[in-house]
Length: 441
Image 1 (tube, one colour):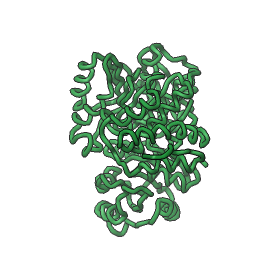
Image 2 (cartoon, one colour):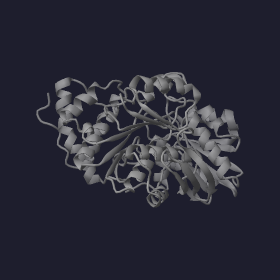
Image 3 (cartoon, rainbow, N blue to C red):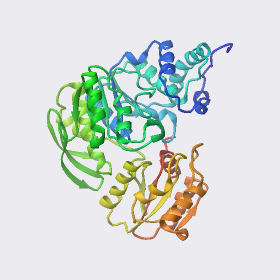
Image 4 (cartoon, rainbow, N blue to C red):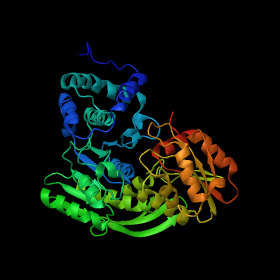
């Protein structure tokens, strides 16, 4: 039994309080998060929540919905994971991440209750459970109009699944985290659509046919309303422009034309259509045309098909699963046709096979630099480089000690009309951005 609760007096204290729980790993079950939130007065019940699950595109869709609602003069909180650089980036109010002072106060508000709960229950709260509790407490304390919350993993047993959401969202379904979520699309879909509660509303982005049965069953079981990409809303017009896409979206209430989305990757336009539909459902009306144009133009998605350097071209994407890597491959070939060859800087987490990841990016990959991010679960560079050699040959593979070293070597070795793509993990994406001076202070 602790003699007194933890005192959080500095940013270092706040980060250390969270980091002390990293070893707790993934803990299925909702009893700990419900228990901690009860000690906090159940802040998750105090404001409306839009709850976003899906295999890919969750953070981007959360950011898009946040931007659209912020453009309507609502006070909007967003919670995403993981972070690229600093943990406080997970929390934003009206699309602006909270600062360090706000983060310290948010952790200080939760820390003593976490200590008391852990002492009383004998259970240690996980890192993600604690970051989730901090989000709900922060948003409640700020008195926001709505929170847009990203699921961490799956849905059914995720720590965020303690809300009775105003709108539940599934951005899409593909194979990922099979050891936890199931080995088939249908099994994974069932875990993700389990965020839908009785009498709720579900909005889904592009979904494979194999996911339909699970979604239909959950909608029927909960007597919910379901709006589907392609049927109820869609991308109707699309034009590629230098900074991304000019998009026409058919929403649920209106058609919105000439939306300038400054993101690379055609798949991002489907996320935009989903975000528009979600926003319409939440407000139960069409969106003002002038405000939506400005809001869409403001959307950014760091580390997602992000061009960070032009000579040579450097493209950073946290893609790490089949669907994400396929989307990145399409972006590379479709939006950068002048690039004749690519050097891949790649680091991979321990539960993934690097070889199919590299192959997914296509024959344009002619060189690979293997690295390992500062991640306890990172695969060794020997494993990644051996996999790369089976794809591009031994002579075209090298190893770097850090992501920064790998990126430096790639830039120095790039020839005219060649590009560099950084992928394999959001940890790698974050470290690459830091190496280029793009991380916030």
